Image (cartoon, rainbow, N blue to C red; front, side, top):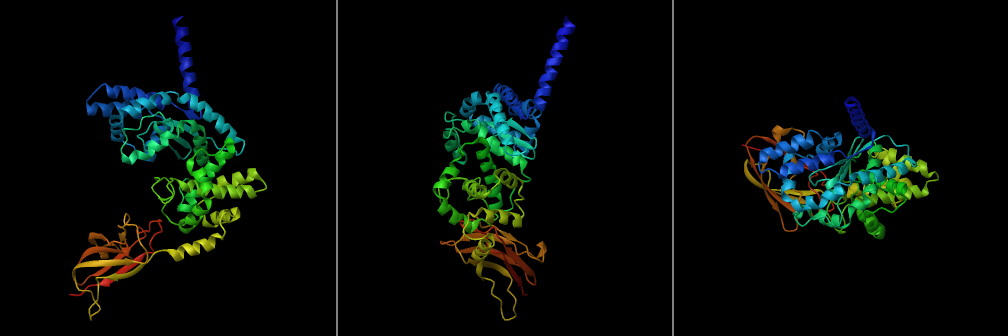
Amino acid sequence: MRKSICLIWCLFVATVAYSQDKSPIITTDLPLFWKAYDAIMNTTDSNQQATLLQTMYIDKGSPGLKAMMEARNYTVADYLTAIHRYPEFWKSIRPNMLRADKYASEIQKGITTLKKLYPIRPAKIYFTVGALRSGGTTLQDKVLIGSEIALADFSTVSTEFPEQLSHLKSYFKLNPVKDIVFQNVHEYVHTQQDTTIGDYLLSQCVLEGVAEFVAVKAMGVASPNPPIAFGKANDAALKTAFSKCMFSPYTNNWLYNSPKNAFGMRDLGYYMGYAICEKFYEQAADKKAAIKYMIELDYNNDTLLYHFVDSSRYFDKPMTELKAAYEASLPTVSSISGLDKGITGLVAPGKKQIIVEFSQQMDPKYFRSFGWGPAGESAMMKVQKVVGFNTNSIALIVEVDLQPQRHYQLLIGEGFRTKESIPLRKYLIDINTGE
């Protein structure tokens, strides 16, 4: 009898393990986290707390947890800091996190609807627990849910959060858990794309827009994300602003940003990509082929990307013309003073205060962009001190100390940019010093 019971139990355990392994949605990290959390709360020894988190949660965690930690650079210290600083938050989010299996079954239904639009490659969705830096992302064939953010609702306590987490306060008011299925279909689309990293603003916005638009078509609902509705109501103004900077390598004003921008709405790049996809889809005779084309597009191939955007007819001008206008609009260094050459054609050595004047007003938040030129690092003119911008942010003052009889170069790079994140056209200072 005992052998029979033992055999039945072993078969049960094996069946559960097999089921978890084969399931596309993994929730095993959540109970591991809460078990470690409770153990951590029962000791005040910081070293023991770190050991408990490592051995009870991280070491036993799923491949998804390892991927989330890699994607967001989470450390044991990050987790322990979040646990200790926000006790009321963790208490309030726990019930929703313990219902993850219910949400998992709903997400599975969403993936099934996606299959009707596109022959998806297998991918797995992992409910993980992070340290408040991501509600969701992807890494290769894995959708990674930051459950502590994605499963929050309007009752989740955020009063303990500092200013740098203020965006989560407004996000929780949107009751994000209600959109968990949509958001994960969006992320699942990312696992079907060849890349989730665009080389510059337009390519990143288009690949995000594709995931958002395909999720809308798969689910048959409007996007629950505020930038989409806001964008539809303000399309003309957004199109004008975006067309001026969409070739910039910087995404900070349009993606993964705060609402502290000219429009008072974060992540408007999602709408720009979405709007382009929507226009392309509307004109396609074969809708299913259009979905396939968008998902499989090489977003970092300018020829293919420009053709796609031109085909959408979203912008009034062709991409080549818009790119030329962008290149012509780049700010430049209009003058350099403080390095005057004497009658010998050489700059006198010694301490100098250099004034770099720009053709446009620059954003003073981004002013450290100095590098070496073709002569290499050994010839670099090292900036000893950044004095700062003048009152209208047109000129920057720096201090250098030049040695005699040296060849110096200093590359003023595109890290300098305007408030619209349009980068500076690179400028090379090239001088020789006298005795």
